[in-house]
Length: 296
Image (cartoon, rainbow, N blue to C red; front, side, top):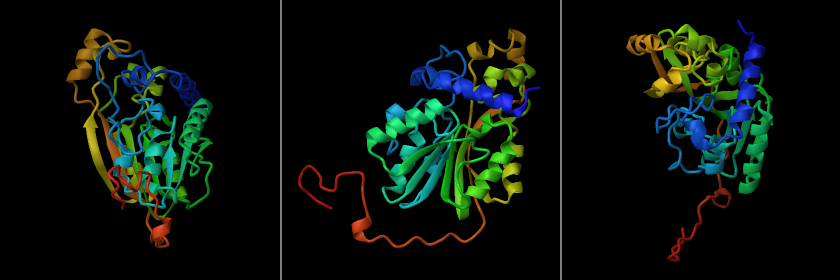
């Protein structure tokens, strides 16, 4: 049985390699960790390309949902993205919070932090920053975030309860999170559970759906609900790396499900009122005047 630190080191090493891969290679494999499947579709990820604020250079194809779509981010919010990778969810969040808000991305892989900072500099975003650190020990103060988002990351962390307690600590009273993650219904085959590479590939590190939701409620979060849920099907050419033909048949016929869920929850307390924005403070990333000369 590997220790928490050994599992973290596996993920860090694997994601350093992923940072150098192309999006297509990452998206067609299991969270980028395994040899790409010859199936021409993405196993985990949802399509970001029509999302406002999307930056293709920052999209490594590693997500399993669109948490920012459900995160109810308001102008001027402080948003934290857990496991920020090359920065795509941060840039989508920045579109929602605007230039008066602040976005902090946290990742423990140095090369990911470097890529994200380069992307932010290219975009000229002075209110988006990236901090290197563990999400189970966040390098941020208490009660700082209005909103926390994360995309297919908590399943990679051995001590999920510790991450959830950190989310509670960092959120302001009345703040909330929207997190996309991988969960299970039923038990994975032992070969999948024990394989280190599959752990970095999001599936072996996932826990039971009910256990996941219980950790959130037990921490003290309220109004916990699933905003979106979709089944994940692992192609047989990936499964065959871990299971023989008979085991694959059994796996596909058993009542075992792998799901992507997007969970919303709130930290109890009264949300602080933000100062009312004056007209001069309101900014828009889109040009105010249209090509035909009509101005807002």
